Image 1 (cartoon, rainbow, N blue to C red):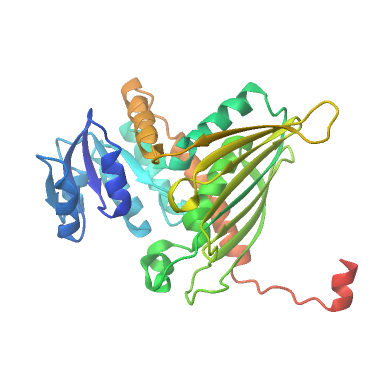
Image 2 (image 1 turned 135 degrees about the vertical axis):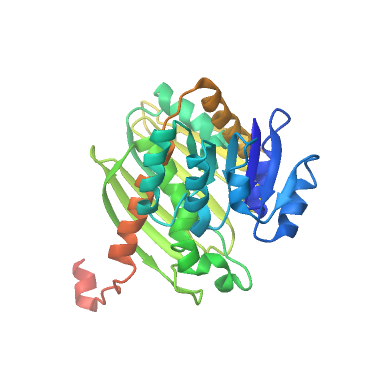
Length: 340
């Protein structure tokens, strides 16, 4: 397929690498032309531009990859869909669910595929975990628990992610949506949302920590924490069933080697039978996700499921921002604390 990339930062480069040999980059756009030029330098024949609309509607393009800041994710996606292009848009796909409504209408009208880039589903540990859950190895699922965090960097509070007009929110909307997406992938849609967001360390108007407790209609729970005050980068996701537990640690790079551990409950209980799989090497989730997206297009299955999942995730974030961001923590007396 012929591809356009709009947004040529770090994620744009990852998406370009993921195209492989069977897809061709035609055009790349960025508001800084030098960044677009640096990206197309690796793709002979591709052209660079600072006109995103030209890239999103280019007549030779089949697929548009949108890897901009959050405020431009929806406008670029919408323009591409109206031009009849398939779109892979980076998570969270919008600053809020409301921004996706017109996109959903146009997707149905133009019969194109819009895929939201939650690439964590395509890490090998999660792919294996999905197979094991589907095989019944864990028995009925009870709950999941997830932690995801980094420690920021000097000047982090001055970056675009700290500007709510651009980002739409803080750490919950940045890394937290990955945790929500993964939890819903295993447990399904969530009915109840409880949580709290707070800015503890960084001097910025968005949160640096988000805490969530989500519950499905069947009472299954997801206990999630996203943080940018995690001074040593961390990723840990646990899936609990009645007959065992799966634990995924690391995502490669600064998060540590990816590892999947299966703890199988024995009939006599006690220490579980433990099996560990290691997944060293580079992060291939980007390639695997794009391959799945491309196969969906080739098969002619133009579904809006990915967009609907993203909207449901953004609704959870919105409810936390509405109910949690402006609420100061209740100060309990020593007597009240003891009673609790």
